Image 1 (cartoon, helix red, strand yellow):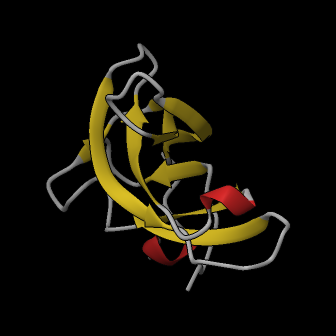
Image 2 (cartoon, helix red, strand yellow; image 1 turned 180 degrees about the vertical axis):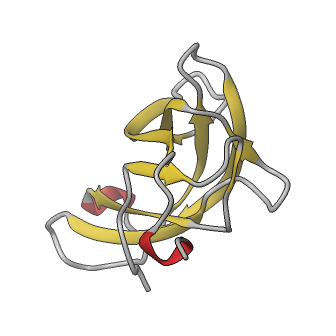
Length: 126
């Protein structure tokens, strides 16, 4: 279940600790790709282009006898655990097909801005 979409994060403390989250992607598969498995990878990249963390997986495309493309949703764990921390800055998630192969392809990406929320929430006063 997808419960939200985020591209900005205001953290109470920096470096920010993040709970386990998931990234949802939609892939359009051509009829010839249906019924196949394709290796994939999600990468978290910092402003300087360094890969901070990555997670590989396999996309399983369902078989179909239909002669037209199919749009398929996948939910993939974001590659961090309870020990992972982010500083203020801009980050990018890249989603790749065939990682490490000659045909490696960045299918898409999303930006994440992390900032320090220096204003206490209203319930913290008192």
